[in-house]
Amino acid sequence: VQLVESGGGSVQAGGSLRLSCAYSGFMFADYAIGWFRQSPGNPREGVSAISASEGHTYYSDSVKGRFTISRDSAKNTVYLQMQSLKPEDTARYYCAAQETLSTITAVNLDGSEWRYDYWGQGTQVTVSS
Image (cartoon, rainbow, N blue to C red; front, top):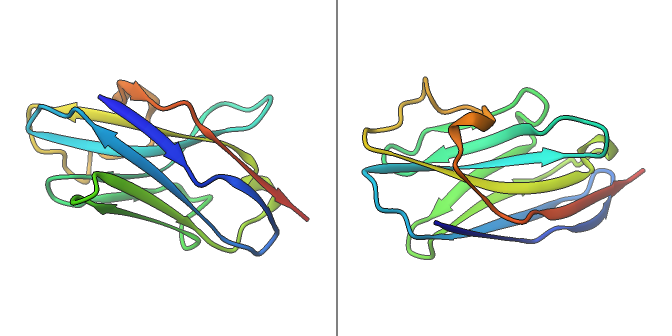
């Protein structure tokens, strides 16, 4: 599985950015793409995820209502639309993937790092006040 993120950058508070994660190489019955972020001195946080088979989505409380995850299966790309950005959203954002033999349900789609086996290199998002 390969993951390549793009779309990071610098923006002022209140602005928007869209991150992209191009993926390839899945072989199992179902898979999910998640977005994580990490800023210096802080643990990695799972902010959003989407499953392929049934389209379940997950958002952390910190981004719910501001971020939207979506998937374009024709382009093998997952997007994270980020709006109303805050300085505390500043972090390096990583795309991650899990694949499973069974269908991923809403219950087991979350931001837990241990579920994800593949990681991209990350893209920096900086929000200035």
